[in-house]
Image (tube, rainbow, N blue to C red; front, side, top):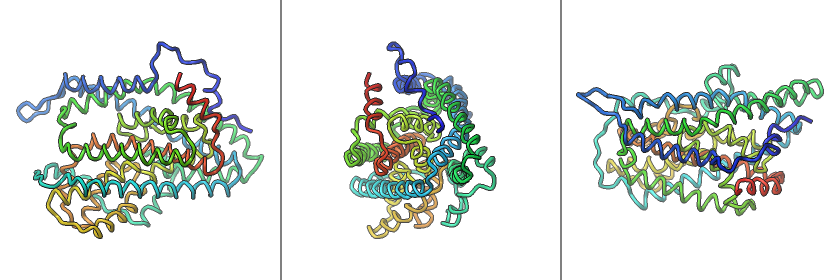
Length: 437
């Protein structure tokens, strides 16, 4: 039997007490980035944008994100194939996939209706009158809405190398599933390939550890460049909507995630300790891809089997976008309120059902949430200028929804593992003990 890629961390030397954890370093980087952006802002002199010192740091964040992205394809391919071929039980893998999809749909439906309830109760767009700016930017993201056939066709790559090069996670997952099934079917003749991929997984997890050493620096640069270019005002613009979305995300974490953890008999604080690092990485970089390698590692160390982690986590990147769906339900009704368009509750329900379908399969699309929002506004004859207005605060909202997307996918692995009866409680307690030290 192949060695589990994550056996090594269990016997690794203990962390030195004087060295803060990666989570603490990332949080420090977040604060430092805000300070640098405020102290060294960019300016607009005579209509010309002059980059300040903080914005000049942006290449550091770009380098960090590229380092993360070059890990994802080989790591995802090797771990998923090992998880499928290693079990050799195709019926079990199909059962896991169905259970994951059931949880994904339930979680995103709750998020949609939570957003719908909040935006109708607080009415953040009522009474506001904002200019329709950034029209050119809206035109740039205006694409033909995806149909069900488009999503189905997109699942299957014409070339695995093209899917890896473009970073299309869902296509890599589909290819890896078929490859893993084929590898399991050939039996002993496929063992050398399985051993090779096991070695690749070992190397990629070690590689991930090296890359994560640069995470605090990448986070500092990303936040500093954003605040430096747009000023602290980006944190205040359309403040009611921003606060409402973050409030909704917090409610979802504290209530829905807590209830879910109770149902699957996993201490909520233990889960938060396990998911906080990948979630914080996703939040500070506004990139769920940046958090995937660390999420894969930590969820397996937390007690979920590799076969479940390697299938559920990447699949959730397209089907379990909790933060994004809450954002969409808020913003679509917000735009209607902003322009004084009356929407009956029945029509809002139809829009929610539409969002449940159109929000699937858009992972990897630039500004995916805005693409879906724009398609929804067009379908329901709402002013597309609303999307232009939201562009100004998209960065700060993207951070929150991306962080919760990753946390929701981490929770999905725990739920499915418990549902399958394969979650390791002893490993969870040991992990929590190590994190508390």
